[in-house]
Every structure is written in structure tokens, then in C-alpha cells.
Length: 407
Image (cartoon, rainbow, N blue to C red; front, side, top):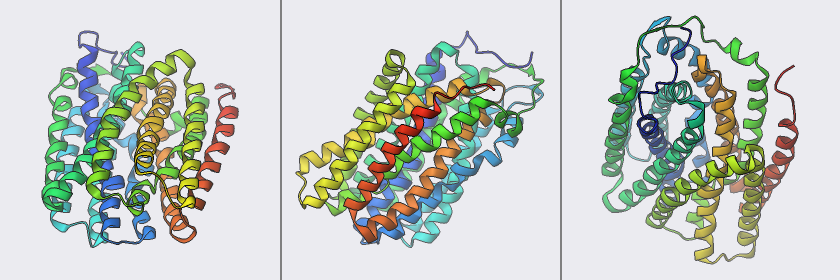
């Protein structure tokens, strides 16, 4: 036997709950780092170009492909059981310990906090390799859509906790207590995977040796890398300064936290499920292009509103939720549906990681540059540039998806 097949004796819902818990846990940390912490720092008066440096913390997510083959070969030995639970347990405990350290360092000075969060990102990105690989190889193809919904929906639910509940707790209980609660939450969310169906895997023989060379030689992977890059530019760059923008528009931390929480938990998760249905009805490509088009329209709206000097508070809050939770959720469900189909189940942890690393590299480049543009040229120019990038990305994706996957 070259590959362990999907285990039909394990209910798909058990697998979805297990991987969904991990995706939520990872996004708790991501939401705290990329959405919660920037808002806290801006409320304390830190400059936007310094806040933009936080995007360097996600560097491990952009280069985890370098150690993905090692992780995948350990996870899938030539003979033996799938070792995903071992990787997940160790990783989640180390990530929670890192958050506990950050809790007592405080949000500032920024450098030591960034160093610890960088180490946490290395650990969580390694856990993600194991989780993605397990999801692709274990879920039957007919359940891939639900896997995408669990992944994207879980990310928004985690963001609701890490960027929503976290900010509310910071406002009410302070930085230390709020961050300790996040650390405990990460441990609790990992338990369904560590104690669940992944423990029931059977020892098997595997003849394939996972490698980057095998992945990069496939046309499906080559096309997916380009599509991931342009889609990430269209969706992530414009929203990288959304938290500081809301602060500068007069919203306080508690309000932004509640907005992030409600938006992610209701709109984000709901649109993840809706996105899965849209992909089945319209096809992934159509959904991708629609998401980019709507995001460009929202970015233009932010630019015009800020230039006019007044954005109604209710409209601003609604637009922020629609952009960061609704449109992005639908778009990424469609994108990940493509990625699952293009990943080789014999080394899914590597293939899926390549796609995510591409997304991360683009996010870092845009995030660091976004802070400088917004700080020195203003929000109207920043959002206008981001909208133009989105429209260019839509045209590029339209051409890329028409390229043959073989040849």
C-alpha cells in the first residue's frame, strides 16, 4: 500500500471537527498578531510604519516550505502510523508557552514581542503542514468542500477570538490577562485533533518519498503558485492597514474588538459556508473573480470616504466587516478548493504548503510596504493603489486559469 486511504469508518464530521479546531487555534494566534496587536499599538500612539513591521512575524509561514519535506517525511514514515498527532501536540503546547511569555513582556517594547511571536509562528506553521496534509489525505474527495469550509470558517472563527474577544479583554482586563486567556484557548482547541480520529490511523507501507522536486515538476502546482500570488495581492494588501484605519477614524479598541468578533464569527463563518455552495454552483474561478471585484469596490469606497473627510460610523463598520470577513472568506474558500484538488495526497503537506507560502510572501511584501504608503501618502492614496492592484489581479487570474495543467 502506497498511501493510507480515507478511513470510511471514521465519520467525516469527526475529521472536520478535529482539523477545524486546529485551524481555529492557528487563527487565534494570527488574529492576535496581525489584527489585535496592531490596534493596541496604534491606540498607544505607535507610528504606522513601525506597526507595518509586524508583518515580518509571518515570515515563517512564507518559508515553511523549506522544512515541509522534513516534516512530511517524519509524519509519513516508510512504514508506520501517521504521526500528525505527535506534531500537533508538541506544536500547540510550545505555541501556548510562547503566548504566555508575550503576556508578561507586554505589547511594548515591540522588538522582544516580535521575537517571541516569530518563534511561535515557526511552531504553528509546522503544525499547519501536518494539519493540511492530514486533511487532504484523509477526507474523501466528495468532502473536500466541507474541508475548505472548515479551514476558512475556522480561520475566521479564530480571528473572532484573537482579534475580537482579545481586544475586548485587553480593554477590560489588560494585556497580560487577555493574552494568557488566548494561550489557554489554543491548548483547548487542539484537543479534538490530538485525542480524536488521527489517533486511530493504522500502520501502512509507503513507497513515495515526499519532496519539493516532485511538487514543483507538476504543472498544477506551477499554475497554483501564480494564482495564489495574484489573489493574495488582491485580497490582503488593501486590508493590511484596516485596523489602524479604524482607530484613526475614531473607533476605540473595544468597538473594533466587538466588530472583529461579530464579523468573523457570523459573517466570516457564514460566508465560508456560502462560498462552498457558490463554488459548487458557479465554479471556483468565477467565485475568485467575483471576490476580487467586490473587494476592489470596497477599497475604492474607503479611499473616497477618507478623502471626503467623513464616513458615517455605521457605514464604516459595515464596510469593514464585509471586506475583512465576508468577501475574503468567500474568495479563500474558492482558492483552497482549487489547492486541495491540485495537491498530491501522497505528499499533500508539501504541495499545500507551497501554495500557502506563496500567499505569505506576498502578504509580507504588501504589509511592510502598506505601512509606509499609508504613513507618508495617506489612506486615500493607499486604498486607491490597493484597488488598482486588485483589478490587475483579476485580469491575471482570468488568463492563468485558462492555461493547461499538463504539458
